[in-house]
Length: 152
Image (cartoon, rainbow, N blue to C red; front, side):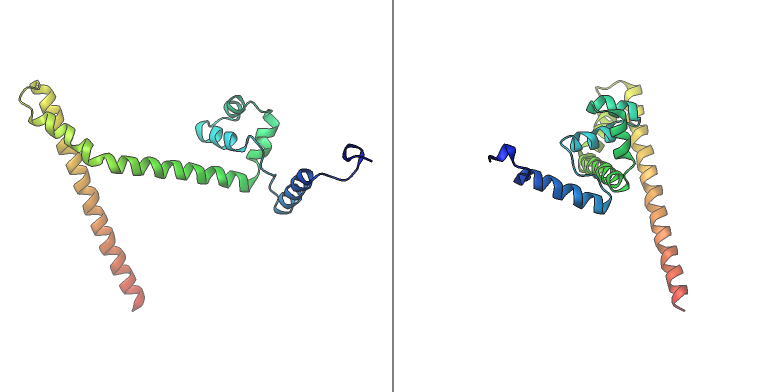
């Protein structure tokens, strides 16, 4: 009797079965070929209908995945990772970007209203950062006072 006629599962089928059994024990469906596309679609879209169009899957399949808490936690982690990456890129570009309005404000070749607006941006940004820094300093002092009172 050849392998095609045998009822015994192949090694690949055994691996699939093992994954399915393990996933059921954890109440998480096994990963599918479309998994990464589905995560990306949920990151880019807020409506199920848009996700369905983006990944070209049945609406029920997308809804089932969205209902699995462990899977949804993975989407939220991916969302947090994207946000962290964006913040890092913005933070890294701040020194370069802050020079632009300053150079425009100081450039005598720029029209007067452009220079005034650039100077306003510099002053407003400085004031906002100064206020933020002051609030952080005050909050840290209050937190220190609160922890010292708790120790007494």
